[in-house]
Length: 118
Image (cartoon, rainbow, N blue to C red):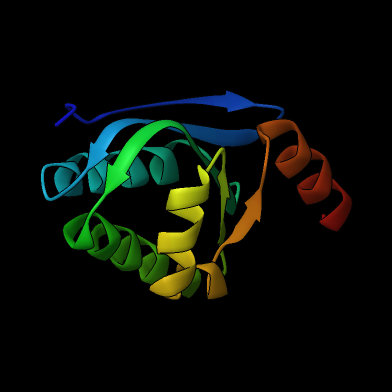
């Protein structure tokens, strides 16, 4: 198993959250802390998650995302997932997360599509 880490930065007014390693129960607290830190730092409602360095997600990791997606939707926010491997896309689709997030291949595509919606 690969240790989970999370980092974020602001790019063109959007928070870009980079996920690395295995997204399991160990990721729960880090995801939630990063979410609230970003929310307290900026007012942007669209958060972009970069999965290029994420290698695995299990049911606990999915549960962590469901929790913060629910909170963010109550604030009229949207999540965008980018850089998903075919396997991670399939997992997200099977569990229904793709009904609640937008998916783009790259961060650049996510930003340009999101800016056109503003």
